[in-house]
Image 1: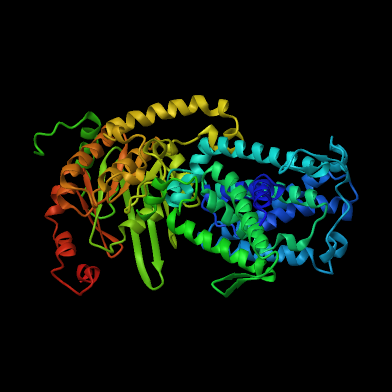
Image 2 (image 1 turned 180 degrees about the horizontal axis):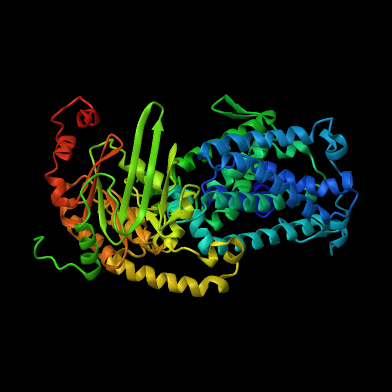
Length: 334
Length: 292
């Protein structure tokens, strides 16, 4: 078993591009779910807005890639209003139901044959990231850095941009949540009617939170699309939302640190367990006392089982997540 | 105890104004701050509130009493925009509130508290207080990103919040989570937080529910203090002793209607009220009895 390789890959995953785009999505979700208490189960739809905003510049509009940010913003606002107007006046559960359905509708629309000319159907969109690549100061062919932090020029470029966005947005969220605006949304999470009785337009604040969180999610989708160099509809399915949510809960909701480090740990754990199982079963199936435990072809599913088990243990032992506040958690019972 | 009390000038004026008012349901007052006309709310087949006419005298402490299910809280919800009546008009300071949504009533100067206290448990006591201030610059999200734009106002708000906390004897809990307060302290916090909106009319829904007797006395003092500062208080209460002790005027509701009004002395000897509370005619409709 190559322990060094497992460790190296794990460390690389901590700081990898996957962790970066997950962190962006989690920062957005944290605004909605962590601070405002909006159960948004459709963060992947906001991510898709970003990715398709970029993709549609070449696929449909035939304009420069940078227009994609504006198109993405427009899509996020439209989606936010569409989802928010009917549901934000109702109890939280309704938003959850509607967002999960909306995310699926978005995915099915963009992958449909009928709208292929706009969204490229199930093939997605591939050629849109040239402007971004050209900005890169690094040689795309060369390898930079030392193991385990070794990247091609292009990966290094997306990583720098991705993590910079993480830093920018987490600082902005930190400032926002320390401001009176943050106080209002946190109060809405606790009790809407109390906030309404004090003269705040709760509905408007919930809408702002939904859209601001969606905009951060949009940048997540963009980074993901730029890293892959393509936009694929199935990258924006339900599982993404729930993995992001899991990563956020792992880090600790309503904490900026939690929304950044949670996703890093999520990917670290994921890659560690995956690499470990692969190394374990590399030459022959793994047996314990003559009983077959796991073989090569089972690594994928077993990995998910282990992750699930780990998260269950976490929720039992430390329900507030790594950075969450135990005190706040205890107040839930009222 | 009542005789010894020194009433402030404002209190004396309100009591004098009310002294000349005829003690009959729906009677007009010399200077009403709140006026409701023909407000009716049906829940399915049940009429929860059917108020023909109600006026609340400015600068007074008016108690709204009545047996369980009389429609007191529903009336509160209707007047503050938390619920919409089927018919009726109501005015606050001669502004018609019919089309005004709940969150706007607070900035007009009319604030309410709730029967079940709504302390925002995961916010600290001081944050709870600061939330109450209206017209905050930093409550716009773009200003939230620019601390220098709201810092000055925030300091002023914080100073005012600290003063109120001191007055309500919560200053030692300032930085604790509101969730760690006792039931009575939460009532105090909710009242103090409501005052942060600079109201002219404070509507308290059962301020004494679940509060221990020692704290009740100090709550009474606080409610009188509001009037002495020039505010009008309308409160729902069950505790007759407290009503008698603190209020200038009492409105009695039963089965959604106002069945009696008057000074506390007049009310405590009113047969309709005794009937409503003690139910000498159990099982029969009180209103039919009255009409008969």
